[in-house]
Amino acid sequence: MSDLDHPLPECPIARFLTVLDGTWATLIVRELLTGPKRFTELRAALPGISPKTLSSRLQRFVLTGLVTRTAYPEIPPRVEYQLTEAGTRLQTVFDAMAAWAEQDLPRTGAR
Image 1 (cartoon, rainbow, N blue to C red):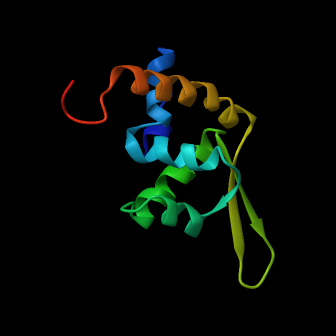
Image 2: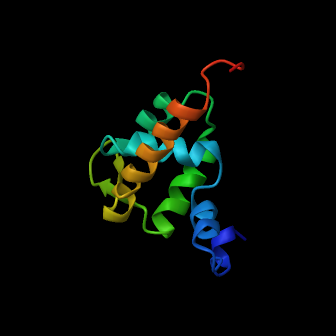
């Protein structure tokens, strides 16, 4: 049973975190903000992510309407993942996170 088998929380931030839980989820969206990607392209762009984790996050994103999955009837089969309109609106959130990190988080461990 996944988290999405239950109603999403009332709090908007808790709902956001239910869908974008963890580092990999955020980094997958970051990669998709540049355009549609195949599974193998996402794996190559995210060294260290397991196929199971990537597949799980993509399935969650499809279920929540953040991402579309398009399977092309070709040999070999080709599947692409792309952000929906709702997903692309996350660009402003990511821009704000990057601006905050640039201003308030040092690149090294010391200030």
